[in-house]
Length: 324
Image 1 (cartoon, rainbow, N blue to C red):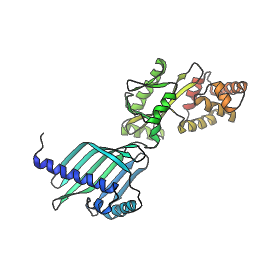
Image 2 (cartoon, rainbow, N blue to C red; image 1 turned 90 degrees about the vertical axis):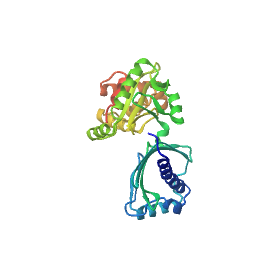
Image 3 (cartoon, helix red, strand yellow; image 1 turned 45 degrees about the vertical axis):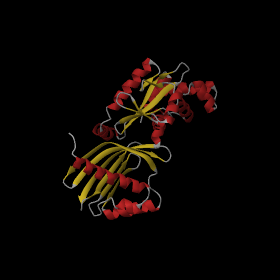
Image 4 (cartoon, rainbow, N blue to C red; image 1 turned 180 degrees about the horizontal axis):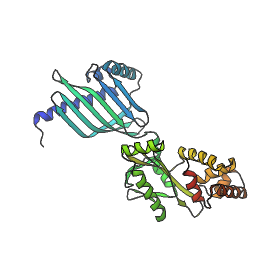
């Protein structure tokens, strides 16, 4: 439906307030920022981040005191190249509801993506912000080492560090913008794991999984064994309705190994070898890294097989990572 000239002018005035409020915040201009807000006890700002949790500021006095301190101490976000899209504005009387997506670039080069909501009130012919919220997607620092894919395994985000790690990975690759495994038999395992992770993309599905399991969805995936005897592993986990893929050593793996070591009664030497195997070392490389002879490594491996009831390194890694 085509908007009238009055509607276009009103929407423009609403967005001007939103843009000015962000600009004044970045410039650390408290008075200019404050002029964009309704200043009474109804005022709210809600900030949500996967990394930092939720912060709720209730009432103008609380919000203004907090923001003045932030600006005076130079703690504002150092962002630039701000772009807004998927903007939707609904006006009902003297209340406007605005939602949009935003991307911005931090001073260290990191790109941040947020989902934003604003409620504005018109008084004396001027629009001012009554409520503001933003949801910052992802663990911004941690995700520099991770690929993000959708339910079909299509690459949505592949930061530089994650791509470099992928180049060194023995089992994964990007083909036609999809995450694939290097061998057909491995790819079947990978695609099945991605499908399983996608089942948890919905908020309530993931919430139910957390309630039932006591933890977020994390899935170590054992793809197989290379010709040199290296076991190929990656880790999938779900957050923000996406599947993240980690190819480097993962802290969750260390936790699982510690639990598995206790369950199977592995000795210190056996645990050290098991950790190297899980980290994709073959037996020769593992023995060299640990400073032990090949015969000692073989003896450790034999004892581990006896305790875990498996007879291959691939089965061993799958067994160890299934614990915890």
